Amino acid sequence: MKEIGIGIVGGGYMGKAHAVAMSSVGAIFNTKLRPRLEMVAANSPQSAERYRDAFGFRRAAENWQALVQDPKVDAVIIASPQSTHCEIALEALALGKPVLCEKPIAESLQDARRMVDAAERAGVANMIGFNYIRTPASQFVRQLLAQGEIGEITWFRGCHEEDFLADPNEPFSWRCDGVPNGNMGDLAPHPINAALALMGPIDRVMADVETVHTDRPGGTVTNDDHAQIMCRFATGVMGHIYSSRTATGRKMGYAYEIHGTKGSIRFDQEDQNAIWLYRAEGPQSERGFRKILSGPMHPDFEPFCLGAGHGTGYQDTIIIEARDFLTAIETGKPVWPTFRDGLAVAEVVEAVLQSARTGQWTSVTQV
Image (cartoon, rainbow, N blue to C red; front, side, top):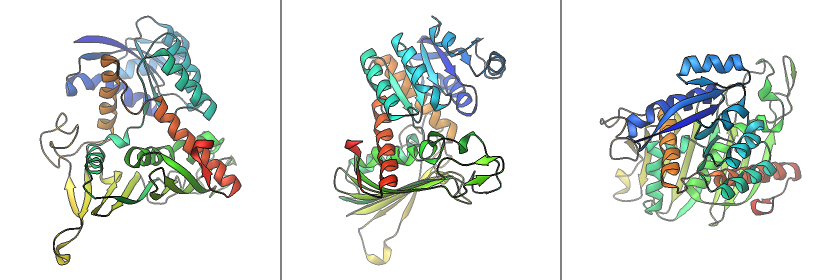
């Protein structure tokens, strides 16, 4: 085993999740590289010091530049606002340091492409933090699809629905200002990533984007609340993607349904340890969706628990992500999703926004 110094930029919601994951991953997966929480940076030295004390980092940094440049920081995790992603990543990659960056990859398509170019020139491990698709259940679905278990795919539906802004009296905040902070920058990348992971490239989209509550106490909303996207995949299969932060009653509605000529699959992150599988076989009177609970026979479940049905949680998907990042560093081989995969999501987002403006089908490859 070999120690690796980890620096995390950001100590909030995702910064904490990554700190916990890096503290746990070695014990759970017996990784060859063992993370050392070396340094944390935040929007002030005082905040960084609080995170250092709370999460067990060795040191707090004055700013992100000091963290990235520190010789004891071997790899960088970016868990700060997306407007900061590009600058931090470019600096770390220029120093030859691997980078795990939270989604979305960047604030703009131009910055996303700069990050991809820099990462591929540097030749070091780079990943984007799409953790939901890493549940054992969704990994199992990817296996079923690869093996052709439900036949030729005919349709896909994906969504990510939450309700944290469903109440029109919820006060104006940073989430309500600027397109990158809206639904299309925050939630939509997750179901788009799921669609790409499960179905392959998206060829074109036809989209409608809307702000449900335009005025909130304290300000006028300048970004979208929800979006519906018709799409055609490169395979010719048609699909639909919906994302919303005003879906009353939905807390973690990351879900998908896939139809095939021999069966169908349903999944919902609010019940993340199960899939529903339908096989078009046997007497019609006995056909129906069958609930399959995640267990040790499914990908990445056993290291957490030996009991089928006992379940994994949100934090466990971040730990799986940490294992993948360490594996990419240790082997020198890319592990999905890389910066380029993050760019693929950003290109779909841009095509959606263009389609919403023009009211026309928009090719993803031409954005």
